[in-house]
Amino acid sequence: MKLARPHKGFQIIAHRGLSRRYPENTKLAYQAALSQHIDMLEIDLHMTKDGVLVGIHDDTIDRTSNGKGAIKDLTLDQLRSFQFANQLDYTLGISIMTFDEILTLCKNYSKTLLIEVKKPKIYAGIKETLIQKIKYHPFPNNRIIVQSFDQSFIKALHQEIPYIHLGVLISKRKYWLKQPLFHEIAQYADYVNPNYQLVNRKFIQRAHEHHLKVMPYTVNDIQTAKKLIQLGVDGVITDIPNEIFKL
Ligand code: G3P
Ligand code: CA
Image (cartoon, rainbow, N blue to C red; front, top):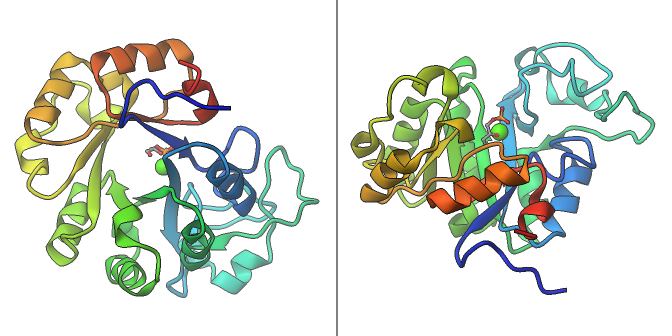
């Protein structure tokens, strides 16, 4: 079946993998998303006690696994002793994935990887570890975008790896009453990705004036998606990627 997208160039991004159907940020969710007609796979990264980047949203494993504790206090071996699952069904025996393993998995698909680095300030050496992986893993650089809520982290990445596409995430909490400094962000990033509730014509116009693309998160209902498309967003980060193709 031929799948249309709202307009040419519009990016459909699967949030934490196909996370409505499979445990978020796991191999099952990533693989399922990669097999769809999506453009990008969004993942979240934290770093273990022994300095390994892993795919997980929260800074603890409490919500998504049968274990407890902060990622920064657990080694990779310790993390691997826990199962990750939805709805407390741990019988599938799904382990956490390292960033290396995620890159290797994604290499065989033609999708772009939208990598969100979570809380970089709490992980000493995370910038160097990430750069090392991006530089030396055979995953193509032109299929990587790194984004974070931490603008200073993205700025620092731009200074060291200016050839990698970068994005700044814009939270409702910080930007409800003020606009981002688009002209400053445009000096080091290619994307300004807001909470969808912050998007209006002015936001998009100002971002586009500075050649910044806008891909709001997390767009999980059709009416909202339609409205955002009319406003002119460049893509959506969503838990329901297949529904967006029907618009
Ligand atoms: O891609 C941006 C979006 O994922 C940010 O929110 O909490 O789902 O990581 P969160
Ligand atoms: Ca995320």
